[in-house]
Image (cartoon, rainbow, N blue to C red; front, side, top):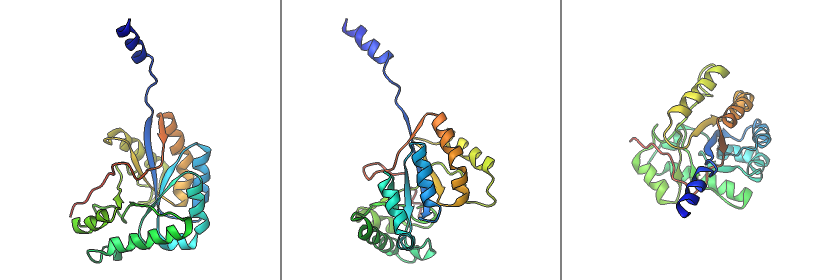
Length: 214
């Protein structure tokens, strides 16, 4: 009987849910509260990679992100090329950003995403300084291109569908904290729900997707 029972357990086991990770760069902005509220309406969570100067500008929005069950990562001070100025400048920017976040929330974050992604200008030496100090560098494997050129919702959704179909592993979706993305967000969330995805925040125990090319 045991083999038959095992067979039946396997046959009727619940199918594992597919997981995807929405990530929003460059905030917080005036759009952030509505993005968080929209996520909540769809029972979705995300990760927000925030800028230090905007943490200071919109501290209440940071609190709203955190207290709504989303996760927060660091994106540097101002999204400037200055972050790549020397071997330790990325580390210095992330430390400053984390300190500002910690002063506001009582806790920091080791999740980081450098401007334009780690494959843009981040060197191995710069990445090494970050990881040696406990920071976890995250890129993405799905880019709907919601911030490139003239934003056409149909094109963005087409990019999202193609990215999901071709990505290796759980989708980590690059989005931006901007009004045009907010307008498309319900369409994206409905599509992802229809495809069976559960949307979760990134945590510090996960293995990151990183591209350091230099």
